[in-house]
Image (cartoon, rainbow, N blue to C red; front, side, top):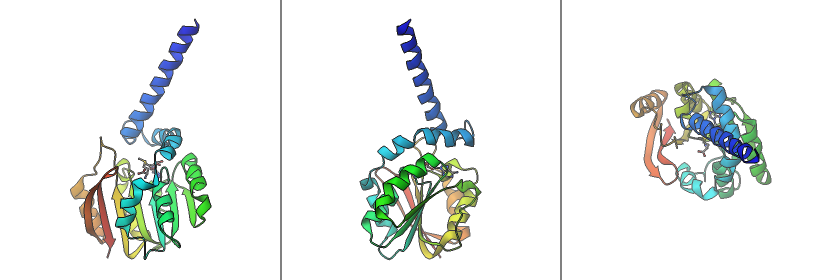
Length: 213
Ligand SMILES: C[S@@+](CC[C@H](N)C(=O)[O-])C[C@H]1O[C@@H](n2cnc3c(N)ncnc32)[C@H](O)[C@@H]1O
């Protein structure tokens, strides 16, 4: 009997892991948004533990943070990019947004010793809760491909970015990335983004760097 309880517990564990993986890897397309948010919340400890600063160093270099005063990370996950950006600068203010309170809480703790940071809980598919032109740099990795409203969110990123500011996008999961590339570039160009670089980075895959004209 003890052995069969053990076996059932193992089976239940395996089923939960498979369900979480299906939800996250399909970026909510199979199960819908509430499950996607729950799955990310379940993965919060994993996201935090697997997001070292060095993974983000090439991204910070592309963002050219020296002259920047503010950076927004849309869907900040483990908080590695924000941590890297804070470590590399003295005056940069960083803002992370994520729809999972568990993820946001962990990122807040991770960044607390720097000051210069805020992390908000918000569903970005409903918009970004910031003034026009509020940021010099905006980044988003692994978020847009999961959003039916990706065009609107891109528009929001454009709205909150200051003229001359940089937007960096990348890191969809290996199964479903990318967004339809032509559609994404066309939408970006219509908004007034100019593509500056298109590079493949270790740990991130294809990354697109835009400047707001
Ligand atoms: C694949 S993870 C990527 C995390 C991080 N950007 C990285 O590349 O390591 C996607 C992140 O975006 C968040 N996210 C997904 N959809 C979101 C939404 N609609 N609003 C806010 N955050 C969202 C998830 O909670 C998760 O932290």
